[in-house]
Amino acid sequence: MLVKAADQAPFGEAISSRLNELAALSDESGRLTRLYLSPAHRRATDLVAYWMRDAGMSVRVDSLASVVGRYQAADGGGKTLMLGSHIDSVRNAGRFDGPLGVVTAIEVVKAAFKTGKRFPFAIEVIAFGDEEGVRFASTLGGSRALAGTFDDKALEELDEKGISRAEALTAFGCDPSHVAAEARPPDRTLGYVEVHTEQGPVLEQEGLPVGIVTAIDGVTRAAIEVDGVAGHAGTVPMPMRKDALAAAAEMLLAIEARARARSNLVATVGKMEVPGSAANVIPGKARFTLDLRSPSDDERLTAIRDIRQTIATIADKRGVSVRFTVGHEVPAAICDARLSEELVHAVEALEIAPRRLPSGAGHDAMAFDKIIPFAMLFVRCRGGVSHNPDEFASPADIDVAARVLSTFLDRIGSQ
Ligand SMILES: [Zn+2]
Image 1 (cartoon, rainbow, N blue to C red):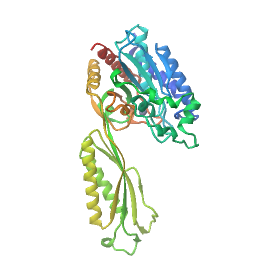
Image 2 (image 1 turned 90 degrees about the vertical axis):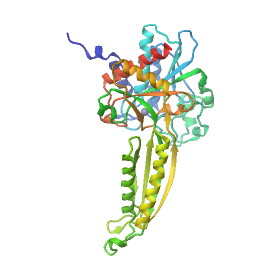
Image 3 (image 1 turned 180 degrees about the vertical axis):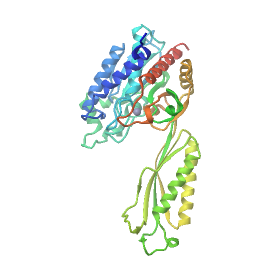
Image 4 (image 1 turned 45 degrees about the horizontal axis):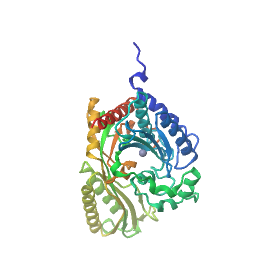
């Protein structure tokens, strides 16, 4: 007998088809761009709200334009478990980054609603609107509001047209003066769980559909400036040079080697500049950036200390001077052990090996760090590609994620 794909992965097919519907809502024709509080975000908000109501939830759009669908607990009371992700995107985005977590949560609640199932806790499915931070400088406003840590200064930030976040919110129909009231009481909140594409290649390489996130990496960003002596490319003998770019290159390779030596460290020199460079001039100055991440703050801080020392040694040896300026530092956000363990059990219940892995990218979940317990489930994505129209997660893998989430809810509910 012929079995249709939809029968094999009912969740996966339904979710994939809704992700395609959402992907059609774009601010630019021919590619997916859905910025915070834009016309496309408005339409996505309405569509998500419609899906939430169809899944038995009461819906409101909060003061920062997060869509909140509430599925009441069995007895109408109880604590609240939050599920969600974001529906804004980068420019020229893929279909899965963000919407996958929102739509998966809605479909799992819908399946419970259709069979009349209620849990001993309420579920809130939340579609955040400003995770990517493309329109305004700061990010995670929606999730920070729920954590009670939203900084009102962010309301004054201007987009490239000079419109403030507060003005854009008002035009969207929101009342930004009520942000403080969005904070969820930690003692009434079970946690926040987010399903998201991995945005990296690890699950694919290991042949696994899903993985459990251990922590969201802490980050150090730094700017490094090397000063040497500019000179004539023909007249200065090699041993007499103070070449800033050659020194920077050696520093870059030392950074790479330091990060390669550890499994829980990634370091990137993403930008290098040689001001006033010319083919026939020995570079007198070079600047580069460093982005270093780890799920362990100790690991990250030790690496930064080592790198600073190595860079100073290289500068000394080459007779150049170096300035190392730390730009910003964000500590790692550690996933809640109990919620993560329940995800592990839910994965094992599907006879899948429970791979634990850190998240090198930031997510709404990190806004809840040390305030409300959070956990994340990663879904394999093809080639590890993200922030790109080629982003893809298969209906079969999405189906696994939805079943894990569904099992997870049952497990939490039976405790
Ligand atoms: Zn995302």
